[in-house]
Image 1 (cartoon, rainbow, N blue to C red):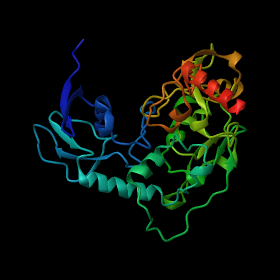
Image 2: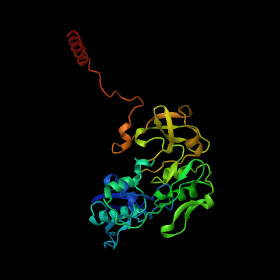
Image 3: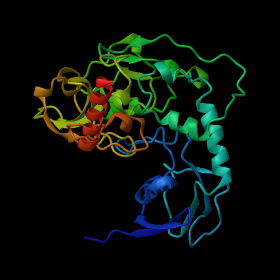
Image 4: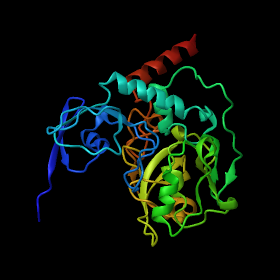
Length: 336
C-alpha cells in the first residue's frame, strides 16, 4: 500500500504537515486554537458543503514552493486545498479581519437581533461572530426580509427570517434520508428554505436539520421557549437503537430531560446523526444509560450552570470553627 503523501503548510507562522488534498480550514483545525477560521456553512460530515457563507476567507501569501506567487484575492479556506510550501494568513492579516467584518455585516442585513427570545442563543455561531467582528451600526437602509413561521412536520418549526442560507439542512436531508421535500426556492434576495407547498418533513432522520442549523432558523418545537440553554445541564447517554447509533446528549433541568440532541465536536458538528425516535420520543432518564456530564468549554455560557460530576459540589464549604464561633455569638446576643 503506497504511503500517504504529506505536504507542508504554514498558517499564521505555525507549520503543519497534512495529507495532500486537505483544505486550508481542516489543516488549521489540526493545529487548533484561535487560528482556525470560523465556518458557518461548512460541515465536515456533509459532502459538498462549504463555499457559501464566506466567513472562512483567508489570505494565501505564498502559493507553494514551485510557485511562490501569492493568490490575488482572499480565498475560502473550506474550498481551497493546501499545496507544499503554502503560507496562509488568517488572524495575522488585517485584510482578512476587515473582510470578515464585512461578511458578518452582510449576514446580519436581514438576520433579526432577537437573541433574547431565540432558542439558539448561547450556542449560536453567528452570535460569536457578531461579538468578535460585528459593527455597532448597520449601513443597510432598506426593510429587512420578513417571513411567516411555518411548521415542517409536527416537531420542527422553520423561522426563515433568521436563515442565512447555509444549505446545511438541505445537504443533510439529501445525504442521510431516502428523499427530501425541502430546499432553496427562488433566487437572489428572494431565496428561501421551504417545502413544496408546505409538505411535512416526516422521515426518520428529519430532526438532524435542527442540529446542523448554525442559527435559530430551524428549531425543536418540543423544546421551543421551554428554557434557556445555559440553565440546562448536558449529560452524555446512549441506548440500543435499531435505527441509529443511539449516542446522544441529554439536556437536563432538574430531573427533567428538556431536549435530546446529537453529540457535537469542538466545532459544533454532529459526530453521528441520530433518529427521530431517540430525539423526540425518549425523554425519560430510564430510557437511557447515563455516561456522565458532557465536557463544556469554560468559554461557553453553558458552563455557568454546569458541573464536572453528576452530584454538584457544595457552593459553600463547611467551616466548623466558624460555625462554633457564630453559635457562641448568637448565644451572647440572646442573653443580652
